[in-house]
Length: 103
Image (cartoon, rainbow, N blue to C red; front, side, top):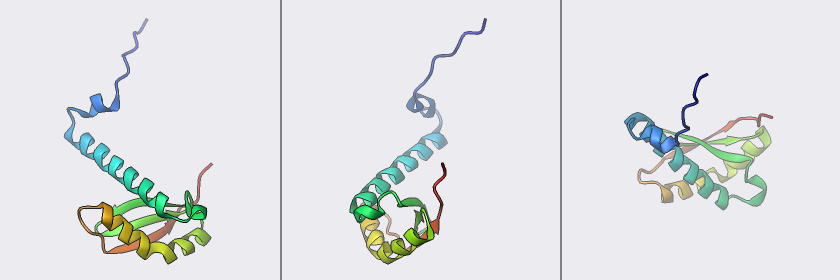
């Protein structure tokens, strides 16, 4: 009969792996930035427009439909300013993509 290995916390797994540790740190930073941006959006846009990623100096926002993407583009400059208040390295542009919700 095989014995199950004890589960380990992600922190324990990433301790010895610098690449995984950096990846987790980046993911957490993006998650914090997304939460902050969500709090600055009008209530009807929250959850419909999210931070997708940061590519070079571009803040990439994901909208759940073309209609929400249009609204996000109207607020893109405000979101860029708000993101730059939170980041060490300034971003210079925004891009909005459409990513329909799954499930």
